[in-house]
Length: 72
Image (cartoon, rainbow, N blue to C red):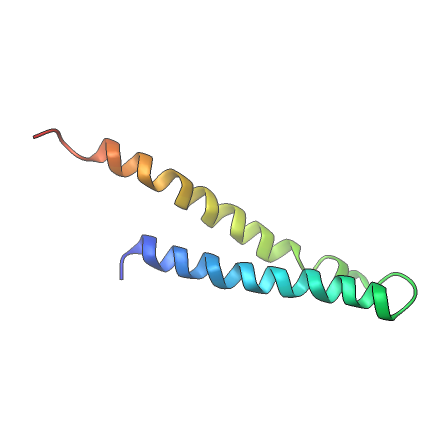
């Protein structure tokens, strides 16, 4: 498995974790009246940061591969 494949797999799993934390945030607001605790409010931020970094890497990957190849 290459680094790109591993990053892509990690990106997919982190997106699931991010979605679950956002759903938990909205569920808390729907079920319990009032603000959720701070740890739940800020829980989506670490996965979002990881997604930002891995997404930028995956976005730049085709461009770096193109320039890395030598013309025949």
